[in-house]
Length: 287
Image 1: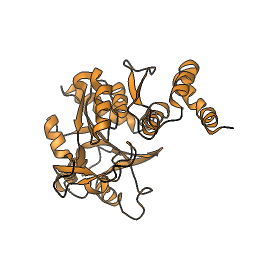
Image 2: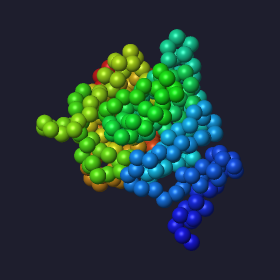
Image 3: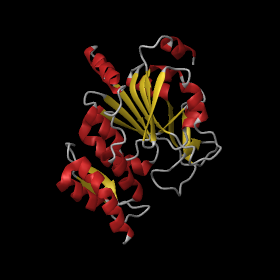
Image 4: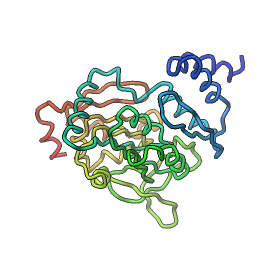
């Protein structure tokens, strides 16, 4: 059986489960095609449950992200009992007259930000993406949401400094960034979480999502006070990509100081902070 037909048959039940028969088959046919590694050609997708169409390039990475975010629903929280308390915090923040803040780091073309906007309709979302080509598609996808989603060209880091891409020949979903160490390299801004929070005029985050291709090693090495003021961290750990590089070790050392529950789903680790546990506020000031 040809590989494309085999993949379509294998994935069809997931599309039908997510969208029903009609839309599931339609989206499976459109999305499960042979794709290029790089392409600027875009297609418009109408996705049930979302008010505006989304744009994807004819690339393996964009179609993979659609599969993960909208078909497999990797950021859905309904399976977790801890979600009840997260939603309570969401409602309490709104009752206090503020918009809950979600920070999406490694936003790619904006599908995760759109997912969060749908499920937390009164939250403000700040989404960082360091790759310029991805960022242009991200802006197009999030423009209909107006001020609810703020796209930021740049990457998350442990301090405010320029970043450069380490592997320019990688696909759009696998680019890695590091500190700029010399003149002449094309750079993008690197933002600390403190700077993102300051720009948003917040001290507390409802959700921080991290899909940052190993940059968690730098992010959690220092200036981690913000961790004690986040209700949920969603992170993709990348040790499988970087054997013995220790990319997850600073993250694990940091979060172990706080009262989190840890749950695995797909590629992501969901870290729910127990806001009612004693000692959380004190630890936040010492980290």
